[in-house]
Image (cartoon, rainbow, N blue to C red; front, side, top):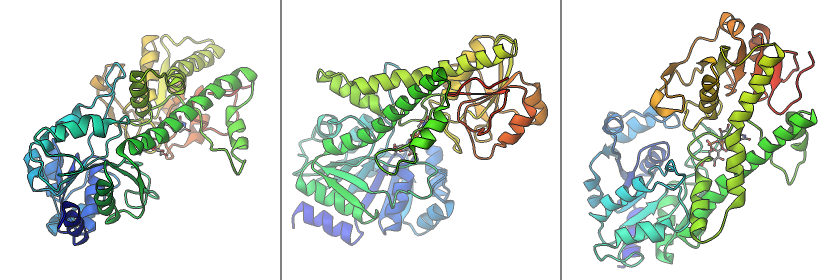
Length: 445
Ligand code: SAJ
């Protein structure tokens, strides 16, 4: 029986030993889906705390219920280890490790390379390796494949290689790992067959494309599309500011168009570990090929400048009340990179706070999702803790600044108790003389 048929049979009868490297917001949900499909799954993660929690039957990912992890662990269907050598027993491996940017905005593939090198040490004929980490087109064939072939095994002949982009939207209860269509690109038709079969065992809809490079590019289009459109609407906000009209009213009215339009909304900048980062994997790669990705670069400049525009808006608002930023008590509402989540990575709110502090403002913040900010992880470089959001605190502040519009915030209270508000998320839908808004005219005094 061919290697392809052997693996297809093991996938069909669920005897394939499935491995997932990287047990974060992508890897853990995927491991649970494979386990629930009937496979025995082993997760590998460098973080011993994650390994221990999983082996205790606990989840640390908001979208993965602890009950689901416990059921699989108790049934012997899911186990975790920090030992990369565990790959020796695997028939299939999905690599779900981070792909950040370096400070120089160059791709950092170090996590991918170390995971692949660990796999290469134990690669055996018939194994399927799938990379899921978001990366530039060409990574699977130019970086992953040569490492795996170091000991003489040939991709597409002795083992299988594919790329499948992760499409996890943390906190999204409607679209989950199981029901979001999964794009898969195999190095060869047989690679595509076995990778497609593995995903079809657990995921509702699999979309096969012709190569790993196409699959890598699909993901970058998806996220570059967002970054560029957010940049467009942020620039529109700056235009509306000067035109004396509300960008929010413009976007809402444009969104009534039932075809050919998709609303994006202005904000204090671009946060998260996907959208601000993924497009620069693409622009970096094509620069090597002598091409300048101008939309990506321009969107990066426009989105990157938004924290400065927010500080200008705060300066103008304080000025309207004959106050300076220097020495002002400013209370920030929301520091997470988007509403109703607890992630502050790349959050523009941190840039705004750092800029205000540089101008001499005394800044506090309230965010129920982010009780603490570690000074090592943001430009302000000081530890900060969330303060209680009380009427007294809002009244005492010279300015309350809405940077993240968590749904649980009561913005009617903000209007009632704050002496001055700058709203960067259109959280306050009504007009008030003391409420200044990003992308809208100065309120009538
Ligand atoms: N943002 C705006 N205006 C918008 C939309 C977003 O300023 O109209 C800002 C957000 O506040 C945030 C940043 O952009 O700071 C990114 O927001 P996002 O809505 O794109 O959320 P992410 O970063 O969680 O993106 C993820 C991505 N998922 C994956 O990469 C698998 C993205 O592809 C999803 O489309 C997105 O979630 C989503 O739709 O929620």
